[in-house]
Length: 249
Image (cartoon, rainbow, N blue to C red; front, side, top):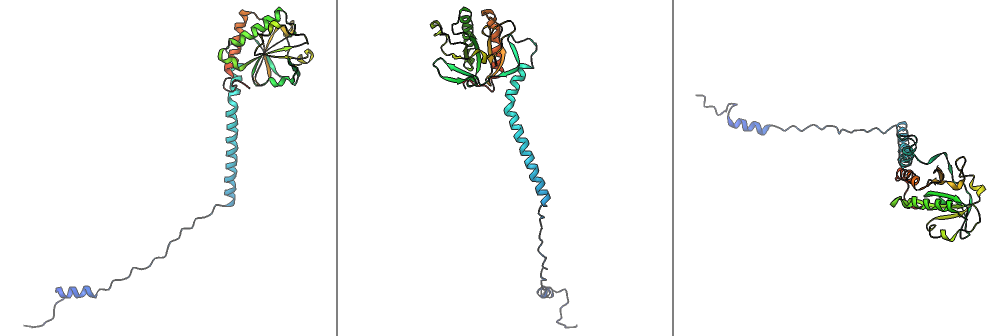
């Protein structure tokens, strides 16, 4: 019998002693990682700025086109998109004639220039201040044409251009309410308006757009029957320009 007090390696005591003797190893340090972001090259920055400038200019051009589109579309619709080339009753004036800076005088003696009439559609008649039966009929049809437009009549002004110094008949006072009456020298007026061959200025009604362009001449010596056709011309013009021509100046 050996009687030895030695313990073999598998004894529980020896295992505990082994754990106590174990030394925890420290975790090694790692270097701190740094991420370096490169700055853009000067050439790339300049190219980006130039691209933004070009983009801004294109946006400005597109904005201008959007603003001008209604005016362009209305005239394109009336003058180009027509199923019948002779659809209109009145004669279109091509090229249009802008209103000149003609001197005019109101009935109260106030001096002005004809271009101040811009801003509204104008239905213009011309004649002597004496105004015989044919003149009275013309002024009557002018008034009736405007009234027949209903609520759109506020976009149209009646204008009577008197070509002499004759006193106006008192019988016209009621019918001229709301109309603009101006005296203009006939020689000057001939620089702007023109009758059809074989007719005189006083035989027609003339249509002027809000930009001051004489653009249509209605047939000479209108009567009630033909005035209905003239009304359709005016209605088409007002409808085509509704998006850019509000009532009033």
